[in-house]
Length: 253
Image 1 (cartoon, rainbow, N blue to C red):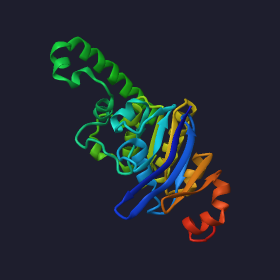
Image 2: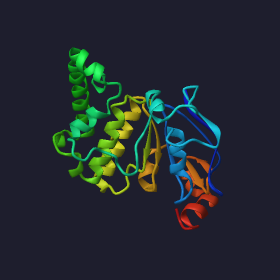
Image 3: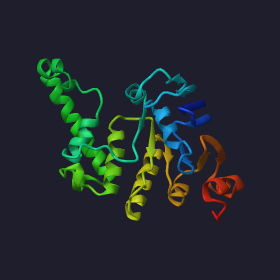
Image 4: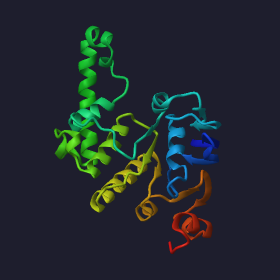
C-alpha cells in the first residue's frame, strides 16, 4: 500500500510552484525531499496533506483518492503533517498539548460533555495514558508539566511529532524536523523517527540538513523550480551533476 502523488500542478498567479510533480512511496517507507529554497517542497507538502488544493493532478493514500478531502479528513484517513515552525499551544503543558491532539473526543461537543460524562471520563483516562506513553517514548516525560512555550526548539519539534502520533497515523509528513535544533536533539529526533518507522509508520521528510537527512532516509527526491529533478539513494542523487548544480551550486557534495 502506498502514497501516490500524480502530476501535481500548482500556480500562484503567473508563478508555477509545482509543475507536473509525481512521487510514490510505501506508507511504511521513509523518503526524504530536498531542494533549494523556492523548489516547491513546502507547497507540495501542503497539497499532499490537504491544506492547499492542487490546480491539477491527484493524491491517493492506500488506494483511496484524497483530492476532495480537507486536511482534517486526510488526518483521519491516516496522513498527518507537522510544520517547520511548531504550532503548540504555548500556555498548555506538554501533557495537555498531547491530550488536545487526540481526535474524536466525546467531550469536544456539548452533547457529549453533559449527557455522556462517564464516557468522557473514560476517554480522558485513556488519552492521558496514551499521552504518558508518548512522552516516555519521545523522552519528554521530564517536561510533562512544563508549558510548551518554555521548551527548547528541539523539544518543541519532539512535541510536534508527539501531537502527530496522538492521531495514530499511518504516514507522517515531517517539515524540517531538524531546523534550529542542536546536534544532540537532532540525533534524538532521528532515532525516534527510525524507531517509529520500524513499527510500520511511514515518513515523508523535508529537510535542509543534508547530512542528517542522508543518514536517516534510504531514498531522496530532489526538487528544483517546482519539478522533480532526481530520485534515488542519497549517494546517487548527490553525485548527480544536475543536483549538484541546482542544490549545491556545482560545489562538492
